Image 1 (spheres, rainbow, N blue to C red):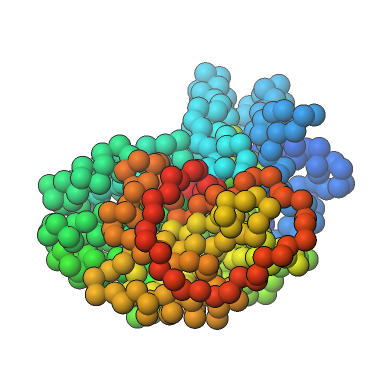
Image 2: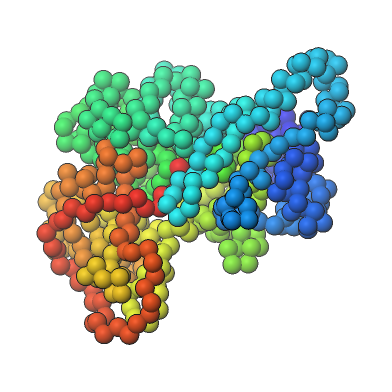
Length: 527
Ligand SMILES: [Zn+2]
């Protein structure tokens, strides 16, 4: 019990060697007392691999455990209730016989212990994964999990430097998604006046603008695309919101270009020194992490992790082997305190380009593990038929940077479709971009083309310019739960290969008149 307390109490003050030693101890205890006795999936998996809790002597031994992937959580005809296998379901008889339980019963009485065990193990709350590619997967929480969610959320508020006199406006959509609840708990556990507007779909952009004017938030939370539209309209309508200190973004990746644009807009309505902070989290973690404020001309200090609640590993996605500290790789997550739904060594499909570091944060001085650099998502790498020879993997993470970093365009949307809407034709990549005042369309098209070729080795088939109003309609601002930045209008079935006589796609930068395309739901990133 001692080491758990040390890790919990001094979560932001411990050096690497101590963190790793205490985490290994805590993981061993967690496996022995919670996961292996009560998780159907891991009990079986450990038996299959002849492992037990004592197989983990140091964190390096984590490598002996098999990974868990998103597909492990999906229902199959043989196992129609797959997510249930990952829920911790205690066996009452064995719990009651434990010396620790008997000892607690002596001090607190049987009824007290029964209530404690209920709070620890009974599922009482659910959030879902988002996305089109798979059925939403439920992740259940117990009272204990909600307490840990509140702890993680409180830390986000602390690392973001929220103050009790602040007012916090969350524009995250009302939805059974992690991000919404984290924002709620971050504000309320930190003792900050919190208002959740439900985002564009609930109150419209107008309703949220009114709150900027009347509630005068110091901290604004939301998804990057919606916040961008909100601030853009606020600037257009001359809204003043001088007290705004921080914009905390969730649910999508945040590029440096977007941070600059948001800071610029905030400056227009009287808040020139806004900290634009990104958070990282996913449903399966039941928690999220944030950056601390950092100077505008410096790189971010990265996502500050709570070492008592989880372990992150960074692996080479091809070999599955851990990479050295500070090296890029795929993020693998293991919880240390979770009840309810539990996944161990969970492969996130997210890549961090600066890796994991334990060095004290150069900005806030906290000594804890941090994830440094840009995070990109494997789900945003898609195969496109750009020529007749073979499929090309296109990294939309890169494309997003190209678009966000362009100072001459506002919001944007990437559309994939089939040439001539013919399922047997090649794929087309169309960029819809918002034209800012004073934009020379031909010049911006040339610049975007050049950078697409340089960074992605492909060029868009068309670049279409739109007004701000048209972009809002295109992205579904105020109409959808989450604004659409990547829409895939290709038919879902793969066409059979056929000889292709059409000319190869040439880089072209023509600017056709803008069209409004009805959006359909596309895969979302975790939120
Ligand atoms: Zn920091």
